[in-house]
Length: 150
Image (cartoon, rainbow, N blue to C red; front, side, top):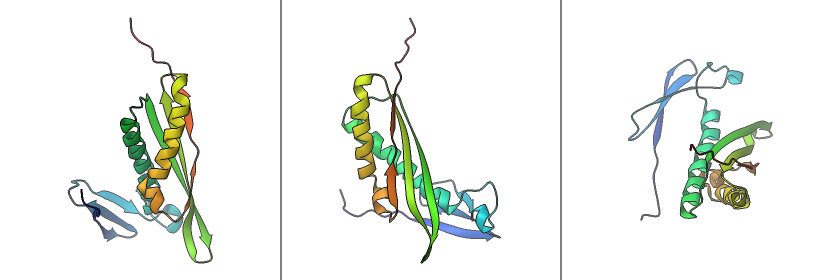
């Protein structure tokens, strides 16, 4: 297994404050714009949304891999992320990324272990480890006893 991996994408300006981004071996493009607060177009992805989505998707896939390796069963996992953008002395930057995972497990005995795995996923997520922002984890573990049809 190699020690270095390369991921490439290309963004192209199309009009006004809008463009498309594409990546090799991915057949679909993403239309994006600057955010509305920076005179962007409504209804399109923004670089800011793509960044916080990268955190959410990385966190979720990292947790899923850790859970699989740990033989941990879960009912569901939803991950909401929020990025705090602030104007500082050097300009605008994300100062904080908040990750709010909601893990649902089948029984109370899995609650504590689920919480530990959520915390481990935050430490292992390569996107959050690559950011210069403070990352805050606000996990929730819910127990939902499955109902079985008789």
